[in-house]
Length: 206
Figure 1 (cartoon, rainbow, N blue to C red):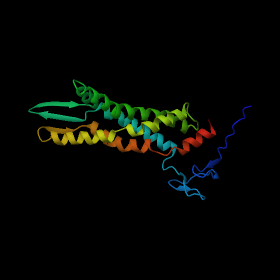
Figure 2 (figure 1 turned 90 degrees about the vertical axis):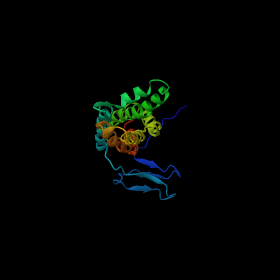
Figure 3 (figure 1 turned 60 degrees about the vertical axis):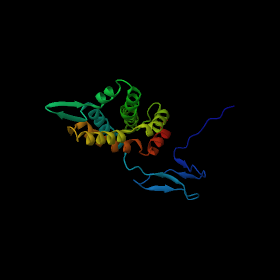
Figure 4 (figure 1 turned 120 degrees about the vertical axis):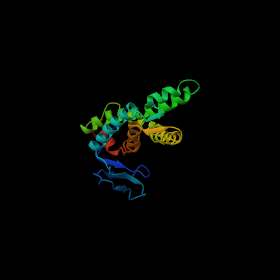
């Protein structure tokens, strides 16, 4: 005979020694530790859910700008050319560089766009005080995709390429690079933010 599982959202458990504590509102940026084993119980979020959503919307705008505006403007003997991230990947896909182009598109465009979309969906419900559908699956996807977002690696590669090309051609940094430069640290902030507050919300409103 199956028994009903009871949930106690007002309580929290130490993951290491199973000591039980009454859940309390954590001060912003403060860390709390278990009195029995010294393990960290949690940390007060530096950003509220509303601020987290605002930063995610900002990241979404920068992501659109980064993929719309050119990353570089090149001029040589009166001829000018410019290229966006999409155009760079498309050019790389011509010929033997196709596997590299696919990998680049995946980690530079696919994964960051996927993470931003998931966070917008997740946080829009959280701001309203609700847990979104497929909450656990979304957090798992965000966790597993975190190491694959390489916006900062792309930014470093573009800057190195621009510096090398500037020795032979007149190269100007485009608005796309500036957008990526702002997006890279912002992606770190929004994808590594502590999710304890979201889990508490999910426990109260499963």
